[in-house]
Image 1 (cartoon, one colour):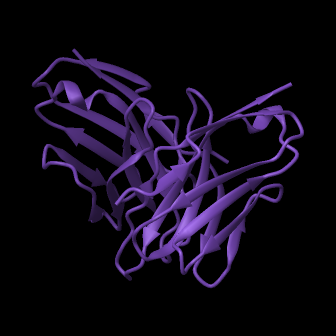
Image 2 (image 1 turned 180 degrees about the vertical axis):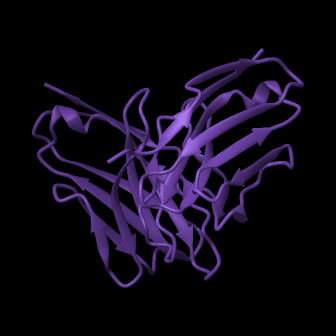
Length: 114
Length: 112
């Protein structure tokens, strides 16, 4: 049973560039959430996608955008990268419907901005 | 509003017990507990819901005081494998709220 997979594992970019991160949810899951985790901090909610639409968004600027495809996989796009965007980006998938479903996390993409 | 976890760090010897606390200033729908080992993904442990329902790990217990908006995670007879950072995540009450807000974590170290 494949878990949540994210690509790439690591990425190095420079300020001002754009990046796309990818996520495939756990088999059977249809909801994808994205989180940013700075060193020594808890994950911070960026947004959640369900039925190919952004269902809820956290306190992140419009530079952060996403997409969900019909096969439930998802992308996170970040434009005009800043040094402060350096972090571990985690994708988590869950079952739809109620809010009491556990989220299953991928291993993350480590993004470094130079 | 980010939930507050305590303690920030705890060191145990194998076999000892620990309690990790999580409190929120908002009315909560549920509390989620995760453990993250260094360089790895967070792993789901437990969900506690309003009304007392629990879902999760057999060997770990937790409580949820709805009136005080507080939850505690109980780790008994700790094993070396319990080491890691424990995060609580909270979902606020409100039918359309899906935003899971995590605390800053509690670093648990279990020594032989």
